Length: 312
Length: 266
Ligand SMILES: Nc1ncnc2c1ncn2[C@@H]1O[C@H](COP(=O)(O)OP(=O)(O)O)[C@@H](O)[C@H]1O
Ligand SMILES: [Mg+2]
Image (cartoon, rainbow over all chains, first blue to last red; front, side, top):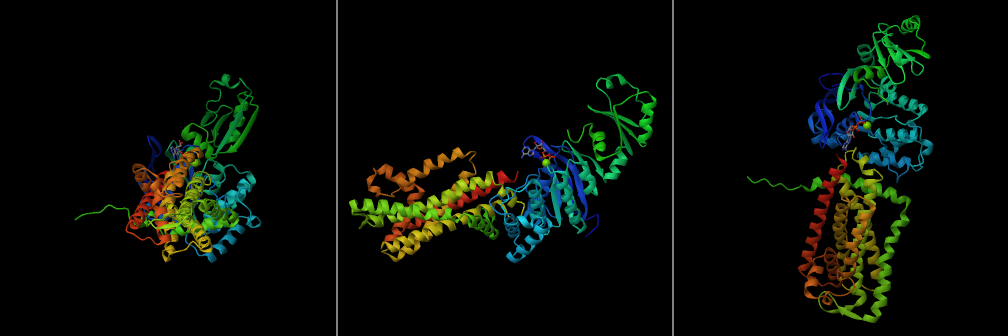
């Protein structure tokens, strides 16, 4: 079964989710292979959470087909969930229990013995760097700690497949890096990761392959590098002009780059050689206030595909 | 061939429900004082009304028509009412909190447990709590010399059955509630039932039409069942009481399970 592409861990065809009249997920197709880490990248409201909940067997599908570990969620929900770890977008920790009890009782829901649950809880507290807080209530924990506890909790049943819905949204950079490190370790242990994010750096860090979602649909699919190669140039030159100047440019940037993108606060020049583009701007006598040359990112891919920024 | 479309019992919950009971044990490990309070309420009623008023009233006609002491008349009714109250507290206020604020159930549904497991598990917990109260109260009755028939042994399971019926219907009702204010409605139903279901005086006090209505209330089933068992007045009508309460509980549980499905698995 491992690595055999004919046996994906998740297989979705025409997968659709409607809430009444509203279509939150509109006939999407994707496969996730065993051991892969797969991402859904998209802005708020794209349908990422709806998709994750269908995979997690807590939201019935309204159209198409979905198979998780070769099983149908509508029929084998409990069997599938037994092998899943779920980190929901909003923490759902049990506020009436302590940190350690949260882990222990969760293991019991999966039918693990008390002894086993105790052993794993200690291990996971260590993994999440929460050993000192084991007997504290959950409420006073920081956002990063709660998130780590939620991830630890999702691992109590040693899942084959881990679903992470915006694992680091709202965390400070340090907390994010700690979480990325933990997720990277899991990936190395062979856990299949499926995550959603609207952070391009997160997608680039964690995903072997991803789909870009926008308005309930998948608009592109590939590895972060492939997507950048396909939809963007190697480099980007960002220009910021003093107020009022942009309106007077009127075609004077034509030909400098393969593509020019006007954003409200800056102009992006897509060129394989960003330095050269910056020099050309100068030679044409244009005087931007700042010039920044950087590598292309998934943000640029998204902009190209949808005409909008990922984070407004 | 005839196909019967009945909800199989296992669809309402499974062995996994027991995990919910375990969760509640964890919670109450931190706050066991709350549990203790449930013992005292019926006890205070028994001492205050049973012995206070009882001294004025003397004897009263029991379920079989024979005169019994007022204490013996009122004690089983208090056992029944406290079983009802215990089940209702757990299945309404506490259930509403877990459903809407704590997100406990949402996180549980990501595990192999189903809404039916949750409904059954929560009810199981309410029953364990109710059973403890019933046993405690029974102990008090023994101490006060209010035990006159061996049938009284069955009063505790009868109180559990009553708790099952009210707990299940309480959860079903709660699943439709939107705000804490809606709980006033429950009080509006429970309080009159507590006062008028033959709890404190026999049904002879009512005109015929009103008596029939009272005889149809669920609490009356429990009061008459437990009182009859306490004094040993066994008759076929007790089977009707049992069937009534059992059906009420099963229907409540099925509705709760459906509602949780609808509310949590969107
Ligand atoms: N339970 C629901 N009922 C109605 N609409 C919903 C529900 N859940 C999500 N939606 C709508 O579906 C769309 C996609 O939401 P979601 O899947 O949460 O997107 P994302 O996770 O990408 O931000 C949003 O417009 C959201 O308002
Ligand atoms: Mg989301």
